[in-house]
Length: 253
Image 1 (cartoon, rainbow, N blue to C red):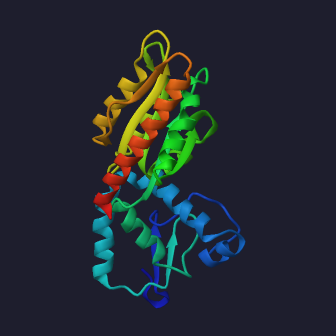
Image 2: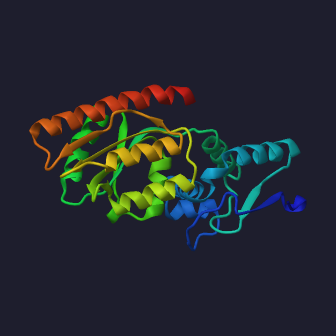
Image 3: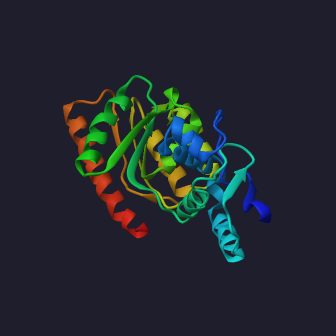
């Protein structure tokens, strides 16, 4: 802390993984937006700091108790905060306390499009319950973006086909990455498709339970290519999951 400049040099805290000609938050907002800057903060927190929520709450409390006058926060990388220097502190505290959006992230991959076909009626079922929804296809999305979209949502739906009685490799990669980040305060369920024998949905629930996430059971799976009745059931699966998300979200309001 530089008393004369009322400057907090925060090292890794409050930084972002982005390169820009703008050096300060007000300069960045002039050429981009507040939303993009705050997304960058969420992206960094989700992919790096998610496991450390309790420690972050403790450290912010210490910072508040010190009573420092802060006009500027300079992290090691990313934008320097001078227009709204306490905004990233507020964001970190909210994230560490489990606050997020009433929203569902549908994160999936597909082999022969059967699992992909299920995402649309599931998404519509979620939206028809008044819950926002984002669909992320893993093979078309950087891992860091998938993790951030998970973090920005109260509910997680993971979809996977079954390959050799196991989960699809890209979905396994996502779940392994997520498990290492030790997520909390989220509710999850799984869906998918299979041919000869299932396995992916069961494996996903094992991972949810290992992470101690709240779960909605049973999951939803279809054999072979979804038929009309399967699509109707997928829609209802989405609706029922959205209802569970809304109820669970009340714990954090």
